[in-house]
Image 1 (cartoon, one colour):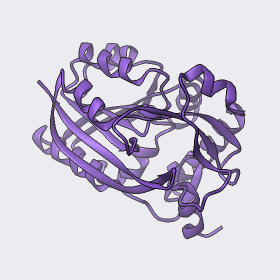
Image 2 (image 1 turned 45 degrees about the horizontal axis):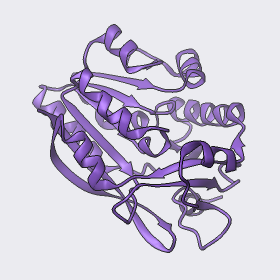
Image 3 (image 1 turned 90 degrees about the vertical axis):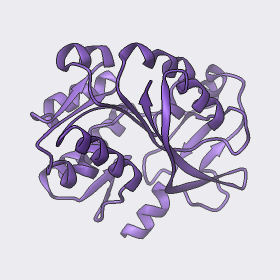
Image 4 (image 1 turned 120 degrees about the vertical axis):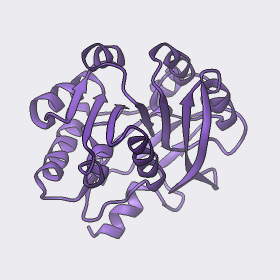
Length: 263
């Protein structure tokens, strides 16, 4: 499969088919029951193998376990990271919540390596953390089971990065409300699809089997409601659109991002 074909699959720029985002469910449990789920161990093993290839230099870039021979940057994210690092005189500490085995870190590593001091900490599910600590971790990239554990070990970071993770949390608003207690100076929500209507919508995402066979609940959150929720503790500095997009009920949904500063 060539790079263009992989890109089309990973972005789900597909004609109406069995794959994509479907339904409008009342609650997470209803959506979960209607989902087929996924083979967690097989997916993790596939992500692990792909990430190790990127780390060793055998591949350029990994996303959702798919390898690419060219890095697709989120330029607004990279710009934000470098801007904050400049304000910190070449130092940067990031908590990457839901960061898999380091997709965003390795995506931006060529630029991050130019900083005087960089620390990248990933918060993930326990099985990802175990694999990360055993096979991926190094003095810069580390893995933790919770934000609390990371802060206890390393102190408060400069940035909390949430890249395309909110849609897969059962209670995303409760999570955002909890962020205030960590007092992390900068918040970046990157590469996230929101509903085209001003309301939350809970769907089931059906993954193309060329990536991995799976289906699970996925939110399309109300963008204004998300801004209002984080706005209680953070001032929004910058809003942007990513290059990625999908289609939901025939409507083009552009992935978006927010950079915010603790009040």
